[in-house]
Structure formats: structure tokens, C-alpha cells
Picture (cartoon, chains in turn yellow, orange, brown):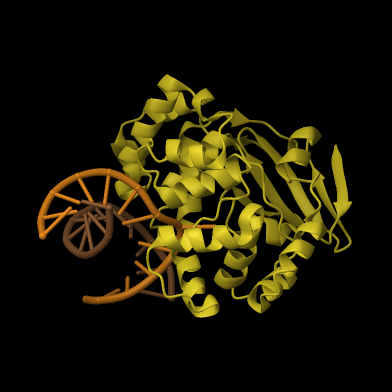
Length: 273
DNA sequence: CTCCAGGCTTTAG
DNA sequence: CTAAAGCATGGA
């Protein structure tokens, strides 16, 4: 089937290049996007954006299409912060994805102290090595592996795929989730979920915020990484250096809009829009 | 060569 | 409690 949606607040390049997803690649006139064991072809003609896929319900939710992003940007602009207004103008096609929870956990463990191209490579090799082979009209691909498949590999395996010192974090967290499941992460508010996530190996405050935001739709999360730190100093005139306090500064200001604001700012800053 | 990338764990004070 | 060292890898 084919999703057909207004392109004003749904621009493939913005949605995919803003740093929330690591599994996509150029395909035909747009991109091929992978999530868990599904894929779709995402492209736009400038007026409408289209997603060709087999599971329309999944990708309708995945791309957060029930939400009014025009209204969100309107609220954000009411803060009257020039840098933020500019970011909304330039990155206005972003939508926050509702991604697979376990995939987010491992993806953002890998992301720590790392750069996006390399993160994509590591994740891609993990899928090829351990993921189930899926056939699609757009060609075969590999699903993101289950926690039990990930747990079956020793740290050395992940090091051989270029994961560096994060190797044991992947093995240990996978072993824990394979044993405990993820029920214990459901039904929590943002603060409770973050505290729980931090108890997993390789997950600290920033990675937990990303998992809350992209995996659990906790939009009051505001991940503070090296780019946000730089932006906080250069564009908000901030003087704090403690990331926990910088996080409190932004979440206190933006509340339920924090996650959206964070993505507009991060994308505009990092890609020099 | 050094510095940096969507930081975290461990250890020291 | 906070501060800092150590950590794999690859590109600039």
C-alpha cells in the first residue's frame, strides 16, 4: 500500500537526516527506511510525501502521522526565541519517529562517544550478521536482531564488527533483556523510565533520554549530547557545564515540547542548515 | 600528530 | 557526593 500525506511537515530528508534513525539508505527517488523487520520506500514530490510499504498501520504510527506538527511549531514559536524560530523554519519537515524499543536501546548504546556514519555502519553489520533475512518487493534485507540473538554472541563478536569498547555493553544488556523481557519498561512516566533505563549496562542519562524520546514517545525528554552542549553555549549564551543541569534548563523551559525542540535545534546545528 | 564523535563505567578525592 | 581517567574506532 501507499501512504499519501502533505509534505509541509513531512520531509523525508529532514525526518531521516536529523539523527533519530540510523537504518536508511538512498533508494530510487528517495530513501528506503528500515525498522525492526519492516521496510518502506519514502519519497516526496515537494507537495506530497509518500511511503510505499506492506504494513501501512505500522508506518502511519512510525512516522507519527496522527500528530499536528503545524500546531507544535506554532507553540514553539510562541517562545519567541530567534535561534529556535530559525531552526523550525529550516528543519520544519521533521517528525519524531515512533521506533522499535529494543532497536532503540541497542542503537543508542552504540551511539555513545561515536559519530553518526560510524554508528550506521556498526548497526548495519549487526543486522547483516544476526538479523533474520526478510524478503520485500524492494529487495531482500536483514531485520534488526532479537535480544536473544544478540545475547548469544560474546563481546568479541561486536568488537569484530567495529563496536569498540561498547562490545560488552551490547552483550550484557542483551543478556538481561533476553532474560527479563521489556514488560518492566512499559507503563512508566518519563522520569521513572529514564531511571530504570540507566540501570542497564551502557545506558547513561543521554542515551536513556534518546530511548525515552524515540522508543517510548516521551516527548518531554531532552537529550544533551556534545552538539546540544555547544549550541547551549554558542546560541543560548549558557555557562553551565554539567549536562544534568543543561537538561534541566531546557526541559524546564519547554516541558512537553522538549523533544521536538531538541530535534529541530540539533538538526539545524549539526547539519549547518 | 591531535582532536572529535548523539557518553558511559570505573575509580579517586 | 562530584571530578576525572580510560575507553575503541575512524575521519578530519
